[in-house]
Length: 275
Image (cartoon, rainbow, N blue to C red; front, side):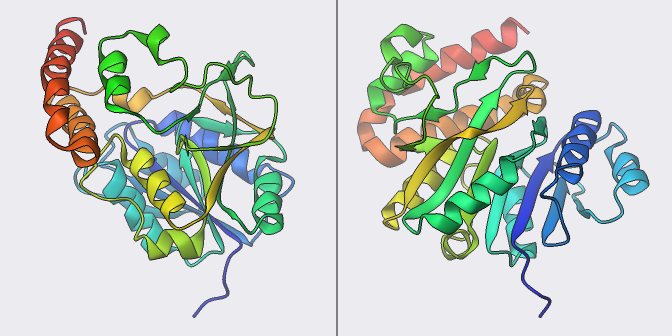
């Protein structure tokens, strides 16, 4: 068996070639980047020249190209199976890592045995903060979310939090989430029933059930452009996204989740009509 890496960075891309190049460039330029860190890129059948970009610029990246878009969760699990690292970072393809982001996150997990995972501060390209921490949703939060009644979700969205201190959280976006490798492998990564959405919420829930905490680390920063892949999604992909949403609420709230179904159908219809 090869020597264990300290960190595996797992990135899934779908038609974000230029952004993923910027992302990998930012990792490789970090002062803390070394041979103990590996990058595993899973390409879900991109048609924008991603394969040429990676092969021409990043010889050391472990590149897995799928012949179809198998979904985010199964693609991440492909990367997890390739890794035996102490820590695994799930990273969005549309991010740029700032100096110290990896170093501080690794050190935090080294120093806090009760931490199963840690995320960091996401910022927009203009430097303004981007919310990435939430409580676990109640059924009413799903209704408010998909009726765009965001003001009623203040507690769920943690709108009281200024992202100015390190705290325990229920869930944090897998745009940047560093997880202990042994826990992630024990949990077998994402539940693949969630192809695109709510896989992160489910994973955070399962990490917490392993009696490990999830932390937000306020002094490590990552630039996040936004969900470019899902913004370009067509109806069939969006249908899968909304199926994931309903699956999560039905799994956690049983038959009561039926009241969310017409809300999701209306939201999907409006999303497609307004594209």
